[in-house]
Image 1 (spheres, one colour):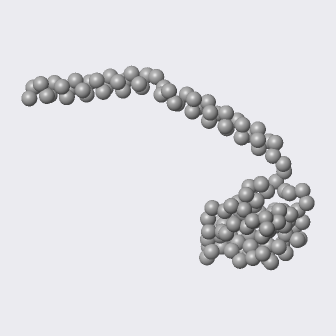
Image 2 (cartoon, rainbow, N blue to C red):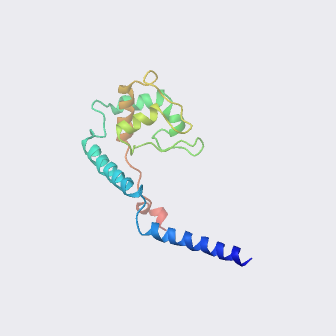
Image 3 (tube, rainbow, N blue to C red):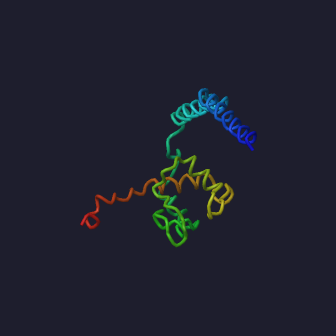
Amino acid sequence: MRWAELRAKAGAVERWNLMARLAGRPNKFVVPFIFVFAALLLGSSDARAQQPSDTPLAGNAQNGKKLFMSDGCYECHGRQGQGAAQTGAARIGPPLLTFEGFQSYVRMPTNQMPPYTSKAIPDQDLGDIYAYLKSIPMPPKGKDIPLLNK
């Protein structure tokens, strides 16, 4: 019995010594991970600086409003893109995404929204819809609504 106790104690001491040695030096994967993460972070800010403006070049807001209604976008997202709790559709007006992000999501959505290929909604029409959504003013903040501040 004494031998088993000593052996268990020795194993615990060995594990403790190993952990103490490893704690003193970084894991061999940590340092490269930090460098890769930093490079990606700095590289993405450069990429954002080089992106074109948020609005498409030839977006027509009036045509976009017509398309938004005729293509049925309003049925889930509301007439002004405000979203709807009944359908679970997100608020999309005015969009907080760049045009490229908006286009990418419409083409390959992740939630219940069906994908709209360029055959269903051509890029120019999607640009017009985006211009319409951008033309919608932002809703007032809660602190600016007198009724909510009573």
